[in-house]
Length: 142
Image (cartoon, rainbow, N blue to C red; front, side):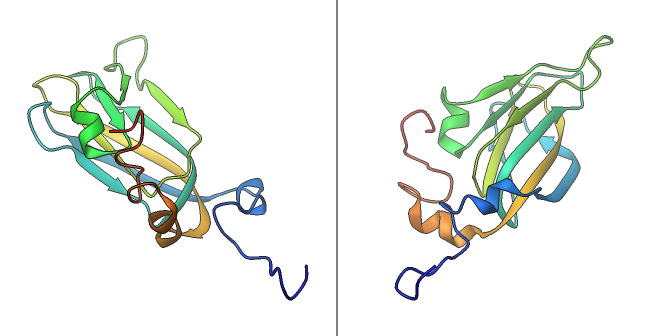
């Protein structure tokens, strides 16, 4: 490392993603019906991995990276819990500062979220994202 090119923690810093992340867990997050406003789960630092579980048998769960995307067509669906699949889960290896969740039907449901956090400040993501912290407006996001 030279004085002219100092080494900092940041979005392009490989070391920030090679180490185990700081754990973040929250449960019983309300996912409103598809006719309502999505719930935003905001992380204190940039993520390196997120695991979302649908903990309810009421409805499939939408997970997206922008409010507009989850209301339109840019989201993932996690099926409702069943007797054979108690907590259907989806893993995302992404660097974001928040995710959005919403029921895939008019029946509200619930979710649990586990994330591995880097030590990268979310403000860095807001400054570098195409149109904000969750890439809103990006192709395939919303």
